[in-house]
Image 1 (cartoon, rainbow, N blue to C red):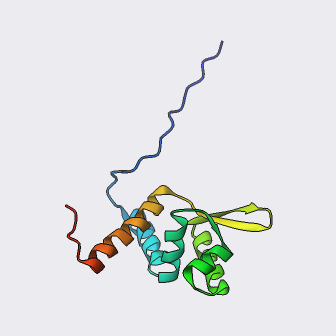
Image 2: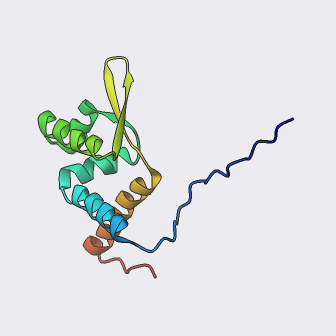
Length: 121
């Protein structure tokens, strides 16, 4: 009977604890550049709660369908959102819990700044 070597699998973690090297700094900068647009940020905030189609996202953001589609194409190209088909509808979803939490925390921080609520320590 042959013995096979088991390869340990890494389970997802919330804190990777890795010091930022050049590659990680560049990658994080790319992510923050994508978040710097208010419409894209709004789309990601919506998608951090529930998957949605273009019509729903257009209505929720108040942006034109063309603008929403263009922003979604950029987010998809950068790997921040993915799509599935539901009949004729294309449904968008955020790809990663880290990204969803980053977007939500950005809005939580903004809420503190807007409302004057004291910061958390």
